[in-house]
Length: 337
Image (cartoon, rainbow, N blue to C red; front, side):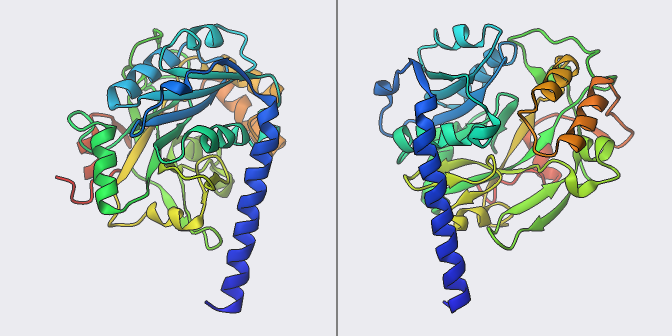
């Protein structure tokens, strides 16, 4: 290793330690509502999430990931004013913490989740998701997350990346009805099958993918500012791991190389952000300012979403299943037949 490379590696180790120390301090902001972590057993697949006002999405989100094989959910509820907390605390496979502290000042919730992962997820395969993300992997209808974990362990693949596939309706945002507890894909089944651009970031080695309907519709003038769609949500967790920016980047940095590696399996995150509630929620999130750094840029974005635009275009594709996504190069089983 050259002196320059050694210095860069040392800098990343320091950064990781700082992130873990932040998480240790931020643990004081969490209050346990229903701690059922004593029920976690070796080999269980865990799922971590930070949620706010997601009572409409969570019934299907929980059902979907239970069906995929998640054994236990570790959830932080952040100052909801709907029935999110009450619904989650009754779920027997959910351990729930609550906080009224700033989501933004907790690195958009990652400090809280990093502490819970450090405390409870060591040695487990762990999904870290948002409430508007639905995980899919190859063969998911016949091979659950335990089967997937076994295959990843056999390959020595310690993490699995995914493209966040943004779903939207054919008509204006907010016009298509959605009944809580039902499959959101039925309400918003369209997505962009192409038009994505990617760049390998030199510092952390992560693949930076942009595109999709938000880039096309809201960030056409500033495409480099469009949301990042590449994530590394499934990880065989170890103490000392730390996400850097949401689940887009992780330390140790070697794990980031698995996203975009042709020999590695890749999944998909179906992003259900554009359910009908997005229109009234956009005005609220603009007011709160808890979900973005660039207030001017994202203020314009929230204004545009609140106007209920149409995201569908002639190049839109209707979602049919993981085999379709594999054929488009969005998902890869990498020889898992």
